[in-house]
Amino acid sequence: MAGLELDPWQQWVLIGACAQRADTFINPFTKKIERMWAARDVGLVVARQNGKGSILEARELAGLFLPRFAEKTILHTAQDFATSGEHFRRIASLIENTPALNRKLKGVYETNGKERIELQDGSRLLFKTRTKKLGRGFSPQLVVLDESMFLDSESMMALRPTISAQLNPQLWFTGSAGLEDAFEFGAVRYRAMKALESGDLDPYLFFAEWSAEVCDDFCARDCDEHDRLGDEETWAKANPGYGIRISYETVDNELRGDPSGEAFKVERLSVGRWPVQGDPWSVISEEAWRARIDEGSEIEQDSIKVLGVDVSPGREHAAIGVCGTNGDFLHVEITSDEVQMDHRAGADWLVKRIKEIWSRAKPDAVVIDRRCPAGAFVDELESSGITVIVPSSSDVGDGCGTFTSGVQPRRGEIADIVHIDQQGLNEAVAGASKRVLGEKWGWDKRDSSRTSSVDITPLVAVTLAAWGYRKVLFEKPKAATPFFYAGLDDL
Image (cartoon, rainbow, N blue to C red; front, side):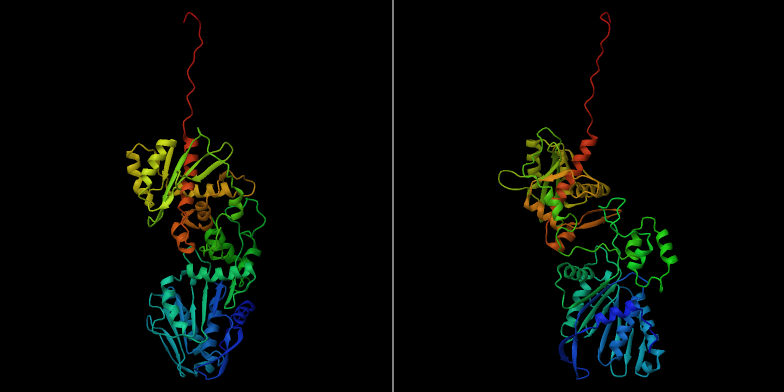
């Protein structure tokens, strides 16, 4: 009636999202017995311009006008006013230009920050930008969280209580691919991925995603197991509106305008850098890490030895790692004395312990990232005669990449790092996640602590130590060849 001609994929999403279960409730607005939604949470990940907005328009129109839905209050939110306002104007136009719907309309109210559509029976569709007070004062039966990749935890905390008392609520999370800070949207996707992996389907979730599977950091250049950026099949796979409202020329031009392909992956192919949701072994696989265990490995006595030091963001924990060679491979471990490991609570013990190791084991250098809490100890250590190497952000990115490939090499490469199966280091590797460092990446101490409650200072420490070892190895001057002259006897 409203002129929305939905594509088959759009219909499929709505049919799945609006499926009902056998459980019933008495709708307080119609006083009729209705079935409950099969999915209380709906997640949709699809690249821009595919037609996601039309799905939301159809769902909100149904909520307002179809007796089976009978949702008195619908809340539509977006990250900014421009996006929310645009959706408001589209759906208002659909109603006003459809006589059968317009007859039931009380009014369209366009006041900055208070946009709303009201019907004569009291039903209303509210449009809000997201704030810490989102949803306060409202009791919506349907909440649409558009641009969920920008949904923050504070907005979500404010919203949850507004729908908790509803008998049959539904919450929609929609947007394009998320990045490292998309915790709320990522949590919805995580539920779907875990259900898919285990086969134990989530009874309250409908989730749909169109995305490509492109090469990661560990693929060989000639990898043929993943989708290629320039293939039209990849574009169609990740864009259900391809050939309908998205043309070959549009996508081809987008790719040509992005030489690195990074923005193209996220925006057009929905390849997200989703945050870790407590899922272990997300960066280095458990299989790869276990394969590098050598409990009998020891650092050669006269080889280069480099320490790495790290302190957690709140100074709750600190760790000292060491890297050297066992003759065949790089050996990394957390240092220890006769009583305990050098992965301990607090950081006040660090300087004294580093001095002890420096005096006894005579390492070649200590690596500390000055931008982290451990940087506070650099001056004191240097004043004690200890050689401290301070890496740049680029160096840290290099260190994380070479450490990871040293444990879990790309195809055609060989692993060159071993460890001795220390529990604290194992747990750190299992719980680690990434953060972006320009065009590189580093270990994310805050995110790992937040999502998996794991302290990864042991991993950061041995990563710095391994990077420092390579730096010392390649920069250490070779012994000079003594000058020798075998001349004539009379000279």
